[in-house]
Length: 365
View 1 (tube, rainbow, N blue to C red):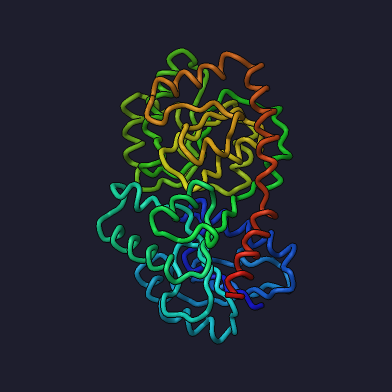
View 2: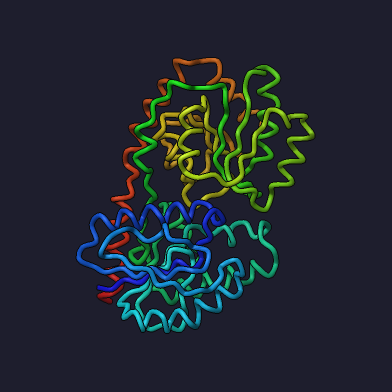
């Protein structure tokens, strides 16, 4: 088949985990393309690094700017249909929540989560209306839905009534670099890899860290991720505790720098209130960093018994969890060993197989 990949949503360094997901998934599919040909439809900001260096893959540059979401959506709903026909696409893969609604080409769409439905308070009014309409219509138009966790699969089925056998779960993988880390340069650092959005629970982490550091002044906190919608609010909370010299906000940084942070961190925390998957959970485990994460799905599903879980709205419990790890190197080593074994099940090769299965199933029906 000729498989079109709708990458119009991707802004490098601007869309968080969905960028990591697509880049790694494409590379994994390029290793075993099953004889298919892939056409990657890119925007003005995408750059040259998305399309794998493989004879099975080619780039179709559209010229649309994804920085204007309305323009990108209009292009996707109109001109992308023409582009796909010109490219003789047999099935269209949409990894960014939305699909062209008027196309007759079979579509497979990734809906990473239903945050707009479960937490509408985190969205601007106009954005929320668009999210509700396009995700709902996408579930009607797509022949198959892909998602990233069992929890999201159940959510999509419950909210939109999509049959479970039409929803495929392709959990993200972890790059080999994380598994290959040696942690000889460990530092008294608490690391949180996360965009600073409201649902990421970063203010609570700052509060908990302030209490933790009162007993453990050698520790510092690193927040690695885009400023997001809540960056200034987080900055104010840091200032309220007088922690400006002890909390680092990196902004978006390349993956190689993320790997370096995991190599040095003594403790990783992912306190999110809501996720489709929670890639930093699997990454921290693969890197062998003792992990604390919230007790909500899918984080607790991913972590199993390989992390300390805390009630997501309990600041004192989060502080206590950090102190538990800080006080006990033997416990940290035990959890790190469990974590690497647990993380081994999350591979991009497995995600690629499930994705190709879904695309082939969509083309047949």
